[in-house]
Image 1 (tube, helix red, strand yellow):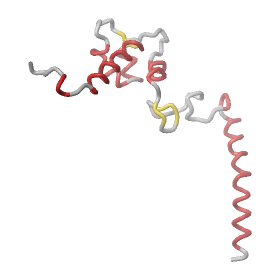
Image 2: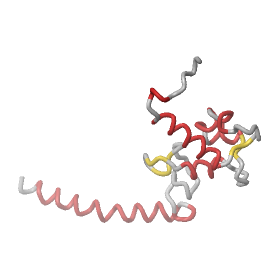
Image 3: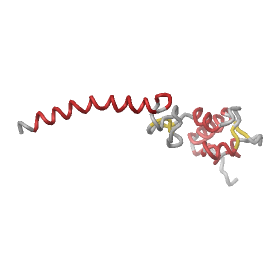
Image 4: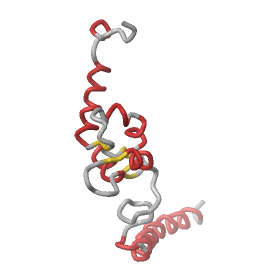
Amino acid sequence: MRRLLPLLAALLLALPAAAPATLAQTMATQPGGAATGSPQAGGAQKPGTASKGTPMSMERRFEQANVTNDGHLTLEQAKTKYKAVARHFAAIDKDNKGYVTLDDIRGYDSKRRTLHQEPAATRRDPKG
């Protein structure tokens, strides 16, 4: 036991010293000093997340999907990067422009949330 304790202490002291060196090597080998998988490095990342487990904002999703950076998201762009908008594209694009804007998406989302929170007694019956 007396021999094991100094060995464990030496291991624990050596681990924190090795970690910064590894991080520095990783940052030095990546373009821009960013780790692989980060949005800045353009690495692979799960769609719909800004970082580990953090959902992306509506604005961020729109920016990533709108590859032409013109503020108009087409159905084709939505299919590749913003699947929730693609599923409801016809409802969001109520003017049949062929594209949706961030304001269109916000309006649709706001309306959907309002209807979801409305008491059942005041909702219109879809059958009649």
